[in-house]
Amino acid sequence: MGRNDWQRLGNEENFVAVSAPPKKTGVLPILGVLVALGSLGVLVSYYLPLYRAHEALNGEYVKLAIHGREQQEQLEQTVTALKRTAADRDQLKAAQGSARVDTEAARANLGALNKALTTELSAQTGKKLIALSATEAAIEIQFLSPTLFRSDASAPTALGKDLLCRIARASGNAAVKYSVVGAASVSDTKQRALKAFPTPWHLSAARGASAAQLLAEACKVAPSAILAAGSPSTDTQAALLTLKLSL
Image (tube, rainbow, N blue to C red; front, side, top):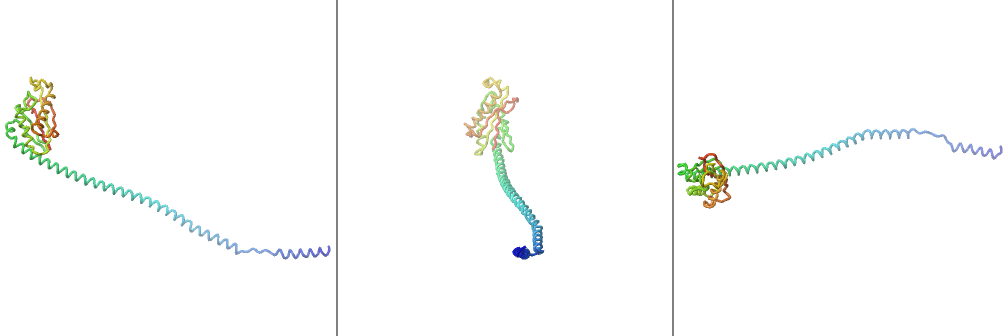
């Protein structure tokens, strides 16, 4: 081995001794990592349940808010319905009160009219030429005597015309409604003078119509206040004309 070789070898040993010092392993960095991981675990284990609880409470709050809003809307609808019902009730009470007043006034007027007709027609009722009766709703006058409405005629007699007009005058300015119902039997249609009326229906309707026409034309009763009809009868002694007055 030459000198250069020894020098090179010596240099290599020196190189190894300088470039490869002994390595040392530290404990503190490992402990730091473990402490950091432990702290993170504590934080996660502490704050994660709190976060979940907060989210759950927030969800319940949202549900309660929605439920409260729905309850508020239902309450407002209920209050509106109650106000409407109260208004309808008050209106109904007012209408009932007005109707009651009108009914009582109509009854009073009808009672006054009944007294006036009773006085006006006392002579005819005493002779049983007519029959007068009254209820809370109407006054009924039956023409009984053939002298008022002959059994062989379809129109009232002169006395019948006079009585109809006296009844109309006794009613005065009251808003009276007249229902005129003629009557006829089979024996009436057999009269020679009534051959133009083949059935009691025809004759009774004609009698009702003639009395109604008389009320309108001779007695000056408004045609809109008159209702005429006919009704056949099997009773030969029945009234040949029935007049009902109502308010």
